Image 1 (tube, helix red, strand yellow):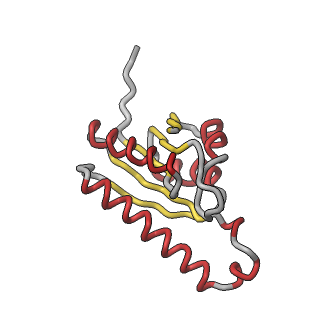
Image 2 (image 1 turned 90 degrees about the horizontal axis):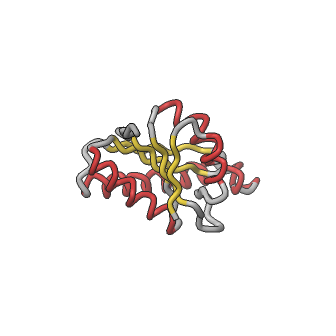
Length: 144
């Protein structure tokens, strides 16, 4: 059986326990295989109420906070010894954004995600894991 070389790993992050496990696994895998690691998080716009949506300051504040959070993940990966790490923040429905926009844009050969999301946050994957596993054009590893 041929061994698959995962040299470009995409990991989806949020604040859930499963997502943190997925991130830790992705970092170890990237370091072990000298792979490039791309960290993505998605700001879900469907959880923003109409008043928040009308406030550009609110949306920009949420996005800035998420960008800062993803940069912290990037630093953790670099500190752990991953040489090539990039971070992406996008907006929309996480599963669709990752499958339809992020994967075609960055061309990874493995997607690592957590199986469940933390409830009530504006940036999570949870039920999106099944969508990504079904529709992703690349291999998907779901961590729990």
